[in-house]
Image (cartoon, rainbow, N blue to C red; front, side, top):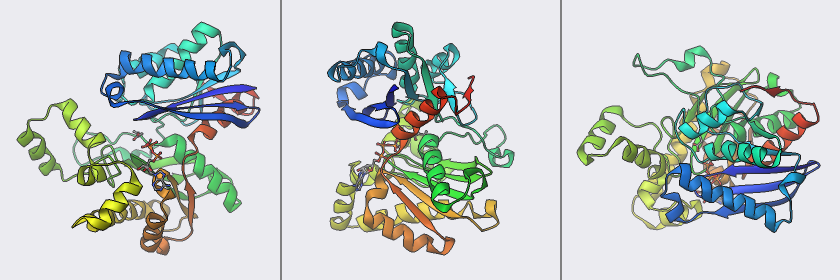
Length: 350
Ligand SMILES: Nc1ncnc2c1ncn2[C@@H]1O[C@H](COP(=O)(O)OP(=O)(O)OP(=O)(O)O)[C@@H](O)[C@H]1O
Ligand SMILES: CCCC(=O)O
């Protein structure tokens, strides 16, 4: 059973072939700035699709041989977690950017195109817009603004299930706080098998490598006004030019750590990064009356042993801390779709 996995990110498109549950090959198709400066649809979409089809040719795989395509789902409508069959509505929502644009929106459109052209069924697993929030978590301090559930759901749910297995519990009976620390970042509270509250550094909670996180609201309004930034420019600043990038001008964490040790004030910024993440994690403790089974970390940044150490120092009082450095999204996509094809996992209608 051969499954093509497609996971487009902000600077690259990750692709992989999984055969009978094992990764046969994986590759990161890097995109240059000229590509990334173009609109997601149609320009980036066409280039990313051509890259994925060229990857299959290089691997000497005829798309008709595939059992399925597993596509990362983007900012779609709010949905329960799980495996979804890609349908026309999902493709429309992805193209329109129903809850905003994200490179992952291109994956379901591409999977649908492969299905139309080659007859290979297209699926998506735990899209960014998984929404299992408790109602109380939706209410903000201004009527008319609701807290949306947009996060690294795929990554966080994948490591939450791993952590539960490691602890010897069923996922739905495990009380976890899970953080994904990558270019962006999310922190989520897992209770009863649901992500009942979360932050995403696009707009709330701790800042991330390139995301501004939550900001003092009046100062943000002044900042945008003083610089005459349009809505689109504001989004770019907050979501791609914020966070550690706004201080150090690079997105590579090793380079950031190096600069932080040399530049005046650099160490303080990196300390603030860790401090904010620790505050974000600890802020979920009331959901669990203070008692969690573990705090779980994943994402590229958690490969850094000094970041691990700094977070351990701030959070050891909470209890057990489990580390899953790197990314598990490709495995999670392949495993979810394989389970669906084998009839072990329910396939949901979008
Ligand atoms: N071995 C490592 N040590 C330190 N930092 C690392 C290491 N490997 C990756 N990173 C950092 O992790 C970050 C990228 O993480 P990741 O690959 O999880 O994010 P992404 O996929 O680009 O974005 P996102 O997670 O927001 O979707 C970069 O800042 C990168 O430099
Ligand atoms: C919006 C969640 C995914 C990301 O931040 O990249």
